[in-house]
Image (cartoon, rainbow, N blue to C red):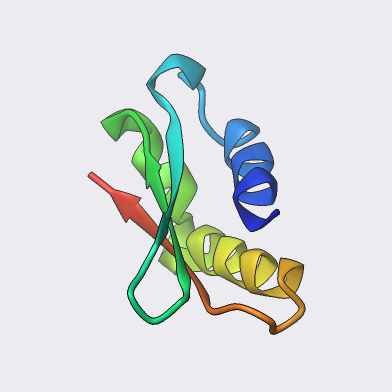
Length: 77
């Protein structure tokens, strides 16, 4: 569920949807890592001014699990 929510929000931020890739990777501690790959020109939009956009994505992803699972969101360049 958190991956779908992050994908939906990021799709509305970037201009090149073909270069967008959002993956969910399970770590060895049972948590989830959501990796966002996008065009370099769109990376600034995903990060946002002062990191506000990416921090908002992290907050949304964590709220989507209701505290049942550890979730982190990373932009992979």
